[in-house]
Image (cartoon, rainbow, N blue to C red; front, side, top):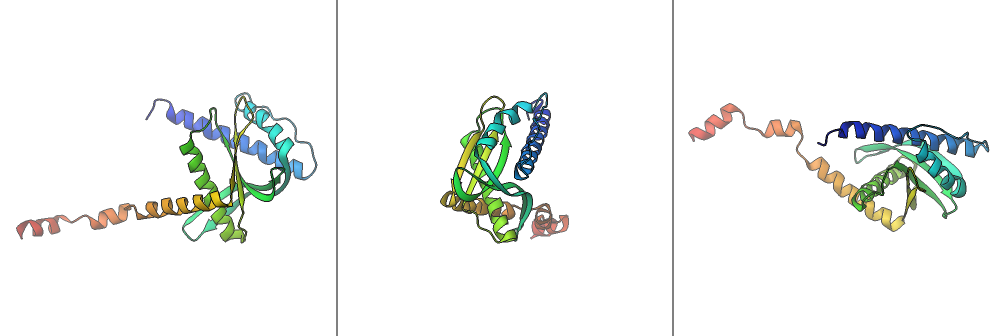
Length: 193
């Protein structure tokens, strides 16, 4: 583990929480036709200042914010938002992230699997199968990085998520590891045979 990684992780979580709060407040005020006051934060404010113009330019309507989902495959979660933008006439599942630098492809892939899990949960919990998703990554000095996913990409991501979930549940647990470990008596008996 790198020195300071715990502190960096904590700072990233705090930043993400603060930016999520700003986005949610803007979405709520936008849906009521109110003006959201500019948010200021010495450290994190730049992430919202560079992202807010994207929302003002593209956001049309909010359907849901921060709703819990569940799926019988034994996972649950809370998605960030479902809404409409000028990018598509379809309702879109959104996930907000923050990052100082452009994310590598493998991280984007993991985020895509997270969106696929939310999509599965939404379908099970609310009976709606979304055909579109979007990842919006707030950056401190540039417009947000945005990634759009269509139904075929989400279907592929769902398959990959299910495979990862199955691999996870196939891992030995502490209980199975303990129950599969021979006792001293069993070890002694087999040594005598």
